[in-house]
Image 1 (cartoon, one colour):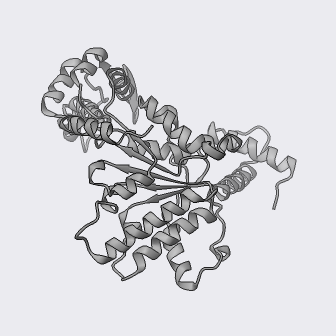
Image 2 (image 1 turned 180 degrees about the vertical axis):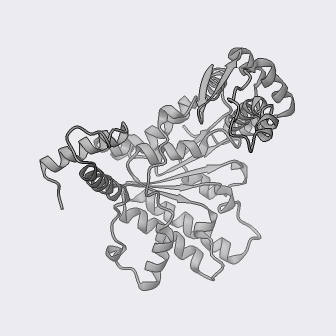
Image 3 (image 1 turned 120 degrees about the vertical axis):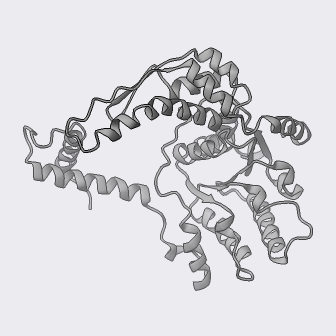
Length: 365
């Protein structure tokens, strides 16, 4: 059912009124009508986000395969993760290469033909906490493709033969919902080097490799985006099929400074409580050399908690008092962050030499 022009206009007015909290005093529309049309408008948007092809049209599949397809379909992102490229601080080279591999072939298909046909497999590797999964979420947000968020639990089954069937159904579903992106996180957990493993694991790996070959030979807009913290443990046959390999490294000094200022700005408000900071961002960024993005966030969170801990006793003593004191937090200073840094060591600094050596050996053009 389509809305008329007048109804759409009312719906837009309702949404604007709802967002600026003026429903009760709306000068034109009755509150009930506003809510009714606002809810209808919002319902249409939700339907558009969730709309996928029905599995009833999943061609040539038996009842068993449709059941497996329903399992895999649970891993499709139905809502945007709401991570934009600009939300990711630093990683400019990685963002550019991901756009070349996944985004531009969908936006400009006329350019990616013949020898310029798009890469079908892309590997993001690097220390934990550097933003590999965040890049994948940006792809899911920005690319407007069907996004399959797959982990080992999605395609590994205890029942004999089901793992390879799940892999087959995954790639068939990706073609069915194309353009699609399959994101395989922690790839080493399902595609470690072969030899000595269980027969079922070996068959599942073989099926995955065969399906990757099928992607490379087809014109379907289906991409495999994988992430790994331990690329040296990956099977060499899988590496060959992941044509583009991108090192997601530790943040630069400039990126570290931007992260600290983003998480601890001079003034921020949380729950009506103001948190003020007086920080030497440049000096702190230099002192956090070797810290990953998640390490830096942990340091900032711990530093922000220091003034909060100092008021707990005062709050608890007035728990049953109607005259609760106004909450006033102390300013977070450079000294606070330095104290936290002295107790929070980087999680991946010692791994960088190994990643750099692996990059030199397996670097893709």
